[in-house]
Amino acid sequence: MQATVSVSSKFQVVIPRDVRDVLHLRPGEKMIVLADGGVIRLVRAIPLSKARGLFKGLDTSDPREHEEDRT
Image (cartoon, rainbow, N blue to C red; front, side, top):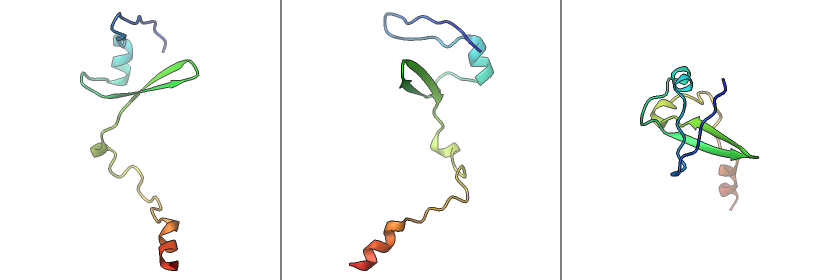
């Protein structure tokens, strides 16, 4: 999906309705702004409460834990 928007005098941009509808964006949602090589990306910020279980099964051991035992 592609759309053209304008930057206001306050550097604000309105996300077009079609894009908001497809992404199910709601007022008040937080977005992360990433700038990369002349490209601006808006990424929905996921609240930590919704990230619970996202990395289920991930090995959380720290190899540096054993270094403390050597001293």
